[in-house]
Image 1: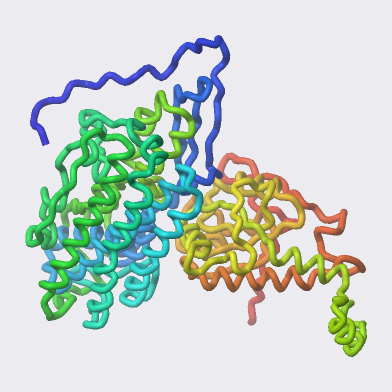
Image 2 (image 1 turned 90 degrees about the vertical axis):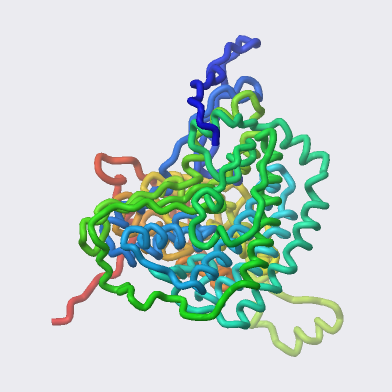
Length: 386
Length: 208
């Protein structure tokens, strides 16, 4: 990250006089819309077909996540974190477990760390796969890419299910380790899934990436400059698509990520095409990490035996734990007053922060592009509204 | 009504290439095998709903393949996820816009009762407070198989609906409402809190 103080950015004007001397047309897109990824609403002002103003409306899925977190025990919040970003329950679990471990100073056994990495990277695979499917769905490739994506996603979900007992809401990690150990047959099955994954990626890339329509719909659409991205706090693949080298797996080196060799793919233009390609490239790197982890994973316990999970009372203090989730920086900020439940429980959701620049991305583009840009931001309303 | 025809006669006719059935059976057979759901997701359960529609579980086998984004073209509303009080009026409005006959599946713990988020101040404690629900599926989220089961239960219900007589289906009775009042944002809560014509909570009887 560059250290210099960034100039305040000039935003394009949000009102524009119409050449046709007509009134701007105001359209309310959502909350019931096939491509808003949940219940998200945008009040769009259109000049002809060009977006001149976009006002997002949130709160249709506000579920009091943080308040519930403050009223339940530390362990009780773990299943709720699954329901934040319901695509990536494993990474949500990890981020929450990481911040509690930071708060209470808990060591995690070696095998549990490896299992966490394996599950987080599998989560990244399935999240990015389904994102690509949804994005192409929004672009008008109705159905088929989504079917391909969900076919692969089901294979990963099968692994999650056989390990944790649930397809989506895994609730797998605990403070100081993981809930259950993975047997050797599970590792073998996971290896098979991961080894078969590059074939799917090749197939998918052949089908879509060089497609003329896809290129016309995504290149130079929704360009995000690196300055704006840094100022707005954008993280994850969206930030890296603008060419900013910032990956928390490298920067923080949390868990055991420093042991793995992987590259951080970077974009150049920051447009929708770069954001799409970033996901494909990240999946290839994830496969590399997974294969290294399968080779290195040691035996041993998966739970720190010293941790009393049931009557868990961390000492006074505060902690912020963050991980590189599939969507960006996912952080949990906890303040402990020594009692059984946190005094303050705050989630730093990546998709909410990434959504804040939606208007800047959409201005000047047609209304059909808004859906594509929104799809490339990769939001999940459970996390945006919490 | 088909059962009133003699079995032997029917078999004989079938051998000659004549298929005898009643209008009601034919009509219900057509209706139950082309239930088009509304493409409408609220939260986590919507992802399982998409998984049900996707390649592995393939709800198309049961006639539900065409997810329509417009309520005007949909027969079935799958309320998949947490209903907040901000979203409830929109859901009732979507339901009102659907043409008769229409059915509702309440998918997941949240849509049934508020589920794990029930204590929240702005979570609706069940969509059955405002619209009639045909099938409830518990689970958080229910598996795709559970949604398929609910779909088959709904098909069974449609199959048993009568077209005439005193026990005819509700949507054929002009006295039955097909639209329900949309709740408004009140000072503290939605107004009304529940529609008494629709919502019949079980009476708790205390055993002394």
